[in-house]
Length: 229
View 1 (cartoon, one colour):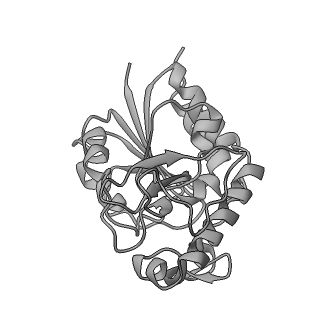
View 2 (cartoon, one colour; view 1 turned 120 degrees about the horizontal axis):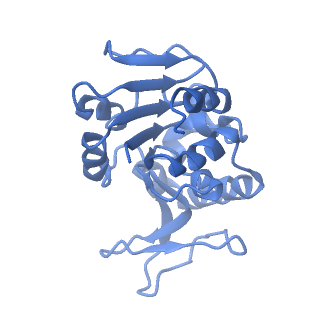
């Protein structure tokens, strides 16, 4: 079974109504990104940051996977599919995808600010985290998100998956955010690369087939190209 490695970005979830700061030039739901997605913002106003991600979770609970997510999950019947996502939502998992690596963290998880950095999963019944909510060791909980200026701990695993690809598919990412954008450099020579995005994306490689459509329509076309009898 061929290994299909998929890198997804904000455009993957756009049709599901999940917005990102890139939609509004550095603003994310009318907040400056530096205030809600950096360690400096957290230190300056943790209550604002916690409230912001509480609202994002409420938004996520009303969102549903779109046809692009579902088609990608269906391709597991014919391919060994490994998703590497820059998105913090869980829409890939909701759609039924089994192998999802979150580069930038997960919205439905929180972690301790203590030395162990233990991670805890939130339930849909308890999505709010406030100042004073602590881990069992007494340390404040924070969003399990990789903020700007923080290391991306899963990047080495993402590189390993990319190096094993028989097909590499990119969906809905501008390829401007590093280190995720650099994964293209680890695709083995001769491996076909596909890019699904309705916008112009600059790719410094000649071995890329561009499908200039949104995630749902683009995945429908990609699946037709790779239908396995």
